[in-house]
Length: 430
Image 1 (cartoon, rainbow, N blue to C red):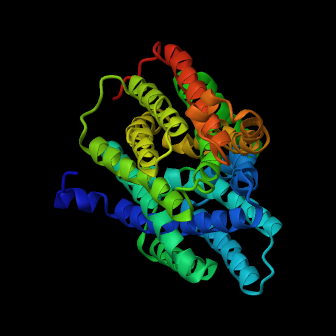
Image 2 (cartoon, one colour):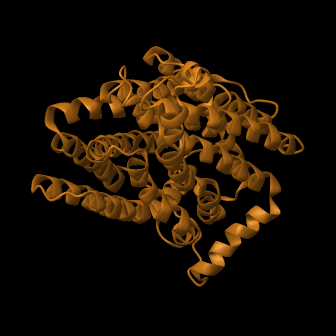
């Protein structure tokens, strides 16, 4: 990545402070989420049970995003972000207290994750608009690369640190680090960052503002088609996420530490991709880049994991599957920020969140359900057939390998079919 000049650092000062401190806070939150997944799998041994944890986070996010985005456009972005972050921290403290008093139950996590997801529903579009307001347009691709870089580091460090802390201190140490990272981000946003005001028409109702976001998407078929394409990608990817613990943890060569290592490899790949995208010139066709990168990702990782039995190959699969994701994200981010007027971004991003991410809880449920109720029972019954043993192995986890094959076929087919529709769209960047 090219070193920024002093003038660039000054122009991006607010962005760099907000980005770095929020990234630290996101790392802490992700560590808690990973540790809770390990705790929950120990309690239930179910892929669907652990997937339900993420479903409870995404369900309110999907259902309420349209209205939350309208609220975001009406209220001060900084106050909105501070309020939502504080409420989410209260949920984490509640988990800590319940665990310390030996009162923590599975349903507590589902409820608290639902509340945290609701807060994120409001916070996320406010954060997206804030990033636009404090970033000059000429730096959109560069800053998108930096955000992908921090997400990648999060993916690497989160499972490694969470697994180590969980082994040494249990949930206590993980949650303590999470709360410390929250304090850093909260103080930085409160005292050191100024977010410019935007026009806020409080005379319009939330329903009217939400409708405006939907109307914008209806009038811009390129944006709508890209969003729906990504919703299909998210369906396959979230089903993979639900299946992965059930693939690695019961495997004789797997376990919690191996799951952490495999998960971290996606972050390593995204760092490489982030470094690449930060120095790449503007592509001739951003739309084409988006669907081709997703075709490569979904058409390689799932197949490799389906037919491999070695942790090193699982890591290679993760690397291949995630290395081009930052390239896709950067091009999609530039299209959205340049096409959507800043005064509409809150409500349009919120509509995007509902349409693009509603498939994530569905995919998490389907992934967990298919593993627990379809693929594993199928392999228990027919897994001794030589062809199935050769392809997917034996014992618990072989059904998840079958699920990986299904996801590879579905994901590749979806990208090929939808890519033909996306080819007709051209995006002209000013």
